[in-house]
Image 1: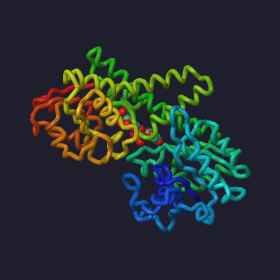
Image 2 (image 1 turned 135 degrees about the vertical axis):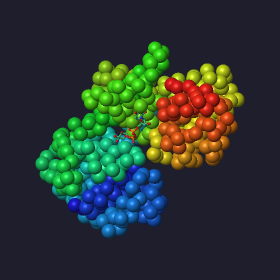
Image 3 (image 1 turned 45 degrees about the vertical axis):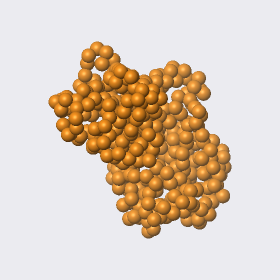
Image 4 (image 1 turned 180 degrees about the vertical axis):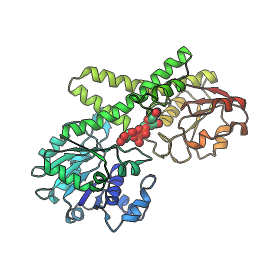
Length: 414
Ligand code: UDX
């Protein structure tokens, strides 16, 4: 199939490359000319395992990049994916990028084309796009990929969700994903609004699981229980499942916090207050994880003012350099507000606030307190006996407590 992708951010670039890998002819467009030039030169705007190789393999044979809507229009695509940001600002979702992208695409659409929204949006947005674009059909095809495994998640998804208004749209999407469907990927065809809500609900549910275990972690500390063991026992129940039950500093990143806020606000707009209250609790537990760790740090050090604290981990999760809504950086901000001198270390994310380029040895050796905020392998494997004994807060529950204590360190769990 000849397909176009508007937006070369995280979602769009991965989507374009994996659609090409599935055998489609793809053109991807972004208004940022510099970004397109860099992608063409093989310099991708973010790190994602396997993506650079995929782009190299398929560009320029069946994967093209442009910053011009006219070039995109001449490509002759019949299915057009919208993969642009839908940020949440001051509680409201900003759909301007989506509608600007639709506006730029509109003059190049032919009757019978299908516009497919892949960005996360409040339910009902597909209908608004349909009214806005007039004359072409609109579908929703939400994306469930995770950073760090985005290519694998796209090439081997657990399900494909097609939110469509008619069979023609369904068949067009089946054609785009033909190789996945032929190899047995489960396809769920439904209405546009169901597809839109399924994405928001999925991310809110994942966020809920994480906040649940973090709430239990706090309770476990109060009653003297080991939340790691409790989590292991819960996860062995196939109805519960293991994912999301790792207690820690809470969830961050470009998706879960934003999508949770989007669902909460939209539910409030529809007066669904029990759900709003529920989701507010999920956010509150998440936010409190950082202040709880700050308070533990203050207890451990007596007073934070003037103390040297090393926060290990600026990426919002291991295996990525993405620092959006980074729990470690949010914690670093709170510690700084209390007067601590904070150094943030990260093996891959660099050049962000609070960060000085220091070796891990320096970050661990020269601190009054070390806080592990991201469970990067480098931290999990640290040998504490190589350093003079100090104090550590294991805010990701990822260190071998026995090893650290045996090396003379004062270990604090959360
Ligand atoms: C998430 C969803 O998983 C994915 O389906 C969606 O498409 C995009 O949003 P991602 O943002 O890549 O993916 O990260 P994810 O692996 O879900 O982790 C999110 C956050 O939760 C991270 O900060 C992570 O550290 C935290 N987390 C995750 C926990 O604190 N505990 C866990 O058990 C799992």
